[in-house]
Length: 325
Ligand SMILES: [Zn+2]
Image 1 (tube, rainbow, N blue to C red):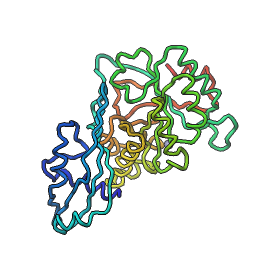
Image 2: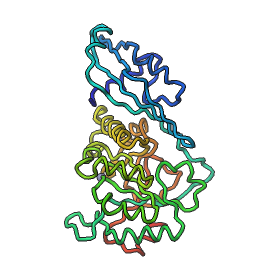
Image 3: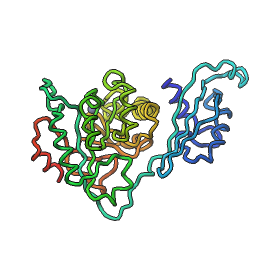
Image 4: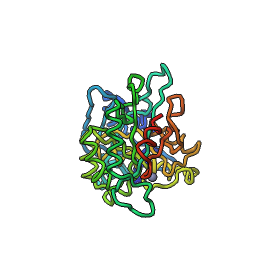
């Protein structure tokens, strides 16, 4: 399926009217999608046919920039005639179409500084080798309570365009998508009405968090899911392999959008590894690239080098308060 998707994305530019369907932003253009897919594309010596089985479903969220166009597309590379091809269609490919990155830019009146905190998971008992990744739920609750009582505003990357007018923004982020994010963290979020971001490794879905848990958290409005790639590969190490890099970045985004029905804006680089090529490719699909470079983030730093402050199991509440700047 991934190969078909890649082929679609890479070949659509050559299809009339020259628009990549992952970039279609306006509902008004919907009729053009039909033209795109029923048109033929000449690529090298092959002819490709695309065919739309159903009318696309369009969802527009009032008061947001989000426009979602979802449809079932049957597509295959073939050298048969269009008529013969349509008779042999077998594989449905579900595609979520999201607007072009860049719609979340905040007005640049002044430089805004704020903490983006990085966690992984949570356990009260000592979990052994990777203990520092497991913040105690009781400590996490103290931290959330502190933020809440001190008028911090819990933000996700969906809120970026409102940052200039947000007095004390704080971003709480969790990497990887551990099951404890649901069992230990989610109840605390509900108690304090606190919002977090979870960067999900798609291949861990249904091994750690199940799709049902992800949907429940996403639907609550308290957890925004963003991407941490398909396989947690160090992106800088595969950056010369354009196809692999595109798969990790794009297909993880598509999968998470399919599960949650919400647009994915941000990629957290696994192990914090990125380079120029990784950033360039990430910019094609995302608005933000999240690093593990420490310190308070500032809006005059590249959106693809968002800084984060790690919070570990052994950090006291006083340490935590110092992290906030
Ligand atoms: Zn990770």
